[in-house]
Image 1 (tube, rainbow, N blue to C red):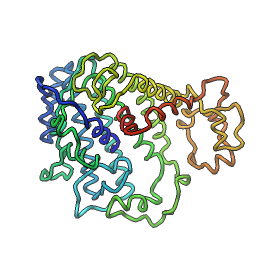
Image 2: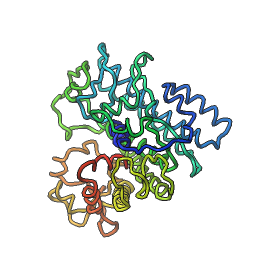
Image 3: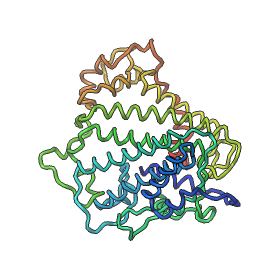
Image 4: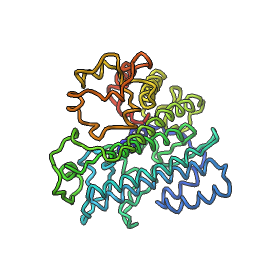
Length: 399
């Protein structure tokens, strides 16, 4: 979650000032006043009356997404999360200080993350129903308001969230103080991909029993943590037990959708000929970071997505020369099918000591001659192109 919000911050640092002569979307009122549930109800009724209104559907998906963020923030506030001193996914969302927090447990955090993923899934399903290519949603993001305390007495604007994540004021506050962005069809696919990415992260985390050592890992984030006396607090990640194998399959399928939606995103972006307060520009549009996003970089990113998708669908294999780095006796010519591994994993999946001693189970292996292998050069090419200042920021906003 913090990665998504951080990418909002870096995307809005240097949007050039332009004359504005188009109104923003009606959904803005609900976003600015923090009336997410009320806005969701109104837009659902509007879609009942006019199911083909893609702007209303886009606005509904955005409202459902920000409502998921707010609900996550309220849960973190209830448990007194101290966001500024940690870099753990989902837990960095900056929420007000709670001087009387509840004690959190491993199971409670799991329920919080599952609820977050469920709400993201709802938003993604809404966005997936958008049909028209000309849909546009004009928003002024500076006024988006969250009620992380759940009391209605202490509001947090999106601007405050971004300043907190950025570690200081943003230049955008002068260049485009409204944070005006005109989201279009490519951004529908982009936001859907982020929903899938975040859901994949939740499923990957929740697939394993991470209760042993939980208190130690989160004590810097939550002031009160319920102790677990019957577990080993010093267990390392190799000792994590797989307790919900179907989640790894769901994680895999989410990642496949991320890859598919990246292609869809750029197919739409690259057809655009306007330059209208773009969220993510093509190579001929204004880059909101003030840095060139070239076709070469876009092609490299999509090349990496192709490799990742091939792994997740079982159409590409992890090559044997790479596998020998973790399994000394790995047979030559046998590649790893990641799809098979994630769809039917062993309970001690993460035990690399066992893998090194016994090798990879034969049921996960296939002859390399039958399928293409993962092309590591495609991955290294992305690392090379997105290295240097702001490289991570540019990569993060691509998904």
